[in-house]
Image (cartoon, rainbow, N blue to C red):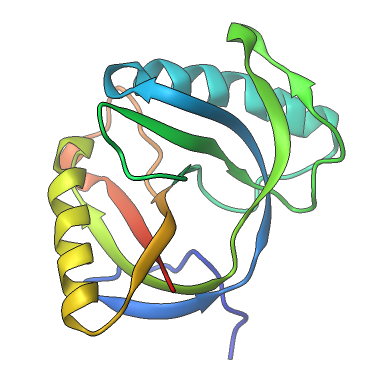
Length: 170
């Protein structure tokens, strides 16, 4: 049997509860970000993050993610980053006034389901995951995580995109 991990080859087509290990990561942390500013934050983070990893001798250990530390309102508090082969040892500034810091994807029990399609449908998929988890008797908590399994690109068809949604269970 393989080690538990956040990533699997096939999508999670129904509510699935899994145990995941804590995983080292390098992230940019941001607070009170307006939803309309998220694409700019993601672009700035990923354009600066990979050179920091390379300079530190670290390899990406999975797809990009966003870890939300509170329920969204008009704004969100989140970490945007990449799981890494080992922990980053120090903070590094990048363009846009952001700082890449060491962090980790949390370990523990997670309810998960895959969202297939463009990012505009994520809200509906999150609502369904939350509803299904509560109906199954689970107590959702924070943080919650979007794992961007399909790397976005200008030529990508949004219908082919996969984002795995992870909901921490208390």
